[in-house]
Length: 286
Image 1 (cartoon, rainbow, N blue to C red):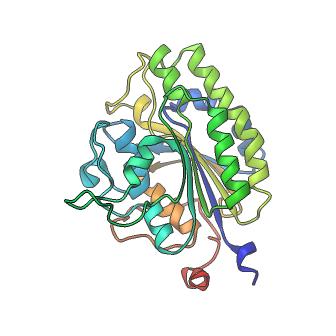
Image 2: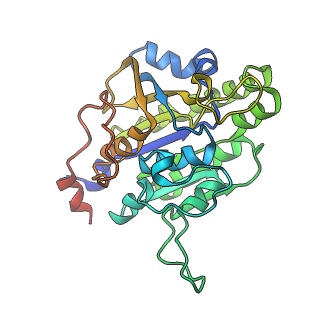
């Protein structure tokens, strides 16, 4: 077996602040792939509070905010439990991110009382930005560089432009809808290319929705229900199904043929079939 050729790759596109109804209306490329039987469209029920940093931590760890302890956006400490990137690193696999700087903060090593880092950063390849209106095109360009130069096993691509327009103009505004279409166009250039690798899986989702008034944080469908698209040979095509955001982390690891920590107790997405290889086979890479 050619281990490099057979190694699974997983690409997660996290489109920040994308509400479900606008996504289904404006993301026409992704919807067309599903209509052609080339992928799956479903719904994710996200964390409460429906705020970015708590949702990032839920996506990373498979735990709800009350469990991982990150309940507000101003919480800047790193994760205290293992997340997807930590597991990937522990198996000597390569994780990368082109993402908002809060992802870097969540995954930096904890520090001793002398201020020294304890361990390595969990995301060895990271491009981070700080401005909420940072262009999505630049986020994708940095991610492309990681793919072409480093070929990571897992890549997080996380643009903030939709969330930014939602806060400024509202979740049903023309500006917000336009940014959703921009992302759909960018994905139309990426997804077919990534799927040329038969071992690749592409997942597209969001952390939370957006209110008409430009806010989020509460527990209501427009804020907690977000889209999920999945593509690849391990995905059963079709439409339908509502899944918990806590299922994302263990499903990502299953697609990478890696074992999930015990705290990731949520069930895997039930539309995943013919997972790439067994964990025993994955051990050949170490």
